[in-house]
Amino acid sequence: MAEEVNLLTVPEVSEFLGHSVQHTRLLIREGKLPGYKIGRDWMIPQTALTEYNTHRSSVPLFPNLDEKEETAQLSFFGPKNITNKCFFYFKDGKVVKPVESHELNEKARLRLRQIYESRNGNIPDYFLRNWDKVALYHPGSDVDKANAILINPEEGAYDLSNRLNDLTGKEWTKFTCSWFRFNALQSDLKEERTVAPDSKDHPATFSPTMIEAFVRFFTKKGQRVLDPFCGIGSTLVACRRSGRIGYGIELNKKYYEVCVERVPEFRENIFNCNAEDLSHLGLPEIDFSISSPPYWNMLNRSTRDFRKLRNKSNLDYKYSVDEQDLGNIAEYDKFLKRVSNIYLMIYDLLKQGGYLVVIVKNVKKGGKLYPLAWDLAGSLSKKYVLKDEKIWTQDEIGLAPYGYPFSWVSNILHHYCLVVRKEA
Image (tube, rainbow, N blue to C red; front, top):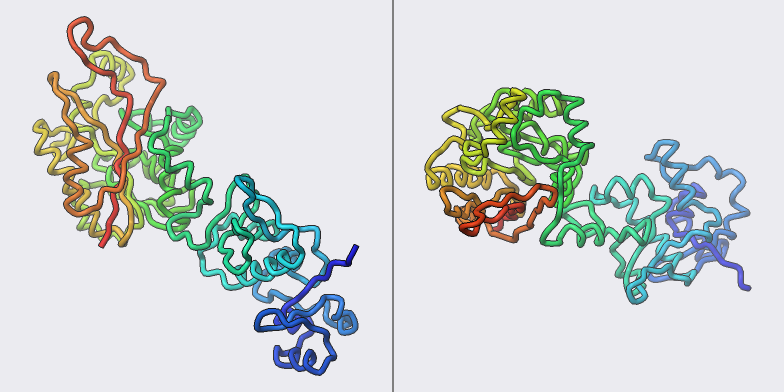
């Protein structure tokens, strides 16, 4: 069986020997250092460095990294036998497999080094922290066209052209299903009430875990997310978990204080005011906005049992009695106009190409359906491009015999997650 040869680039050899690139190329031309012409430059066998290696062990290949990072990268890129690792994967039918060709693996290893050294902030932290496990990926096993990396083929590959988020193709595809089931998680409730016991006062909270999925899809780590109806801070908790920067607006002073208690790191980004005043807050450019506004005055018309239970525990059964509160507007058209105007103001803050998600549902009142989700989508289309809807269903809510035995009245267990975008 032929011995595998580990090839190094001219810059690698120059760094290792302490020579300039020009001097290394001169050694090759003079025949003092064996090399192979691949593409426009030379590749040098690792074994050819033996006679020069006596005083080079202290020369770092990665002088800008700390000792731990340098050790990790030397184990990945450095002049040593690393033939046990596969650096290149391709797709065989529906299965991602390692490429067996040593030549292609060697080219992939060098391509990975180029990617690492020229990284421009677009490589997710997860890959950078585990770079010694990273491999190159191209479905057709073409190294020159490869523009994706992976660690575990089962988790999918990350395309280096991805400017929207830090997800692999598999993670991306999973999220784009047009519907999903999600019910309140006890772990979220426990965390919420451990940090802020008063959080249970809010009558209509939602899960940071659910919101985090949206935040991770529509942003990259370090980007800014705005919730103009932030309540007790579920969106901002999702931002903290995912490494994003959260901004929130909350009218109710009590809920505002709970929000600050839950995410004190965003204290300066949380405003206790009317969301209709957001244009006066001096907010920076926002990368993404997600929120759930009041579902008109639905809480003011809560069922008798809901009110009774909440009152018995001395908990709020509606958001507030403040006249500025959108949840206290009696006229549907007036409510629709005011809530729409808030999102139309956010348009001016949102970056070009940024997305806005509104979680809302249609409302029943007096035996009539008010298509709030659809009407809001129409209003937002004055500025935004309506891209899609994602249906959120809650299947652990008990059903009631509404309308029985006289007329049709449904149990509404779904919400619309409207997805709009700021486009030129």
